[in-house]
Image (cartoon, rainbow, N blue to C red; front, side):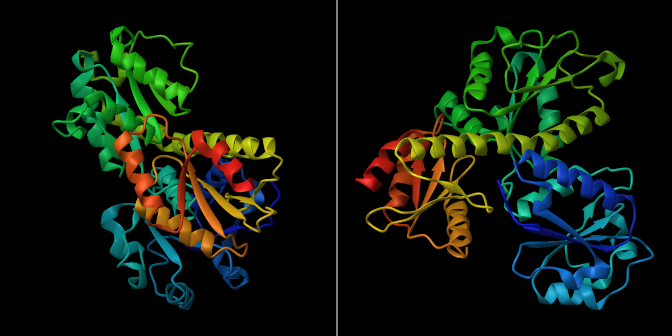
Length: 393
């Protein structure tokens, strides 16, 4: 996909330390995971900040240190221009020592010079650029009788990282269909964290969860309990093997005595999977929609902002089609509409396509109702070919 240089811009402010290099290399890698060229992102040091393009998305990262905790005209200018600035500190209690007064009203992110926290910063940058959705949804799949204490400790660790975590005993409200709610929440998750214990594969429900995740292109962080081997049927799994050393004294039992550094490794791996997971689901929607359009003689074009334009209808209509990973919400629909409306390429209609597999019927009915009241249409991927036929009829 061809695109001009510097579609997304990141300004580096503050300390010139090793964190800059780590952020640069990881962002280039994640941009590639999302199907974009390395030239799609431009890194601008503070010395040449005047060269930034005001018409392209911008994000500033202030690398805090005790030597640079002073106000500057450049930071004042960025604040005046409403540019998002992310202050970085070596520890959360160092804000007043490492961040200038201008930025102390902004929540700082802890990123150590050893790379601790860098994955969160990378994903935050992609979220700000709307390359990743802001919702950070994970689903923990496990067999209750085996590792409930481990699953709950993992839930707490992921929740502390800012993830919206689904864990059946904590997340399913009373008086609802339990299994339907599970499928619905899984379909809206970025990653499934699957705890594969010796009894896991014997459970009907947990094996169905694995099958549904595979069938809907959801990426799986597959945690192999000590002694468990990789499962060849898990086509979308990224295996992470747990050993005896991951538990204090290997009191495996229900995993209550898992080490904190092991939980941190799992959280880091979940962060790393998010971009690849969303990219895979985005490609599924984009490829299937474009194939359906080409089968009808249309010429879809994927725009640099990652939406699809369809022009040249006999009736003068043209479409902007936006793939949405997960279940569209009214807030997300509004964000998409504003983004497309502000694009230089104008469209008479806007569609949001999404994968409806596993989504509750009540939610599908809700989206159908919204279509009657909003200047934008949500389209189930399964219905897209038929709706395109109606457009060209």
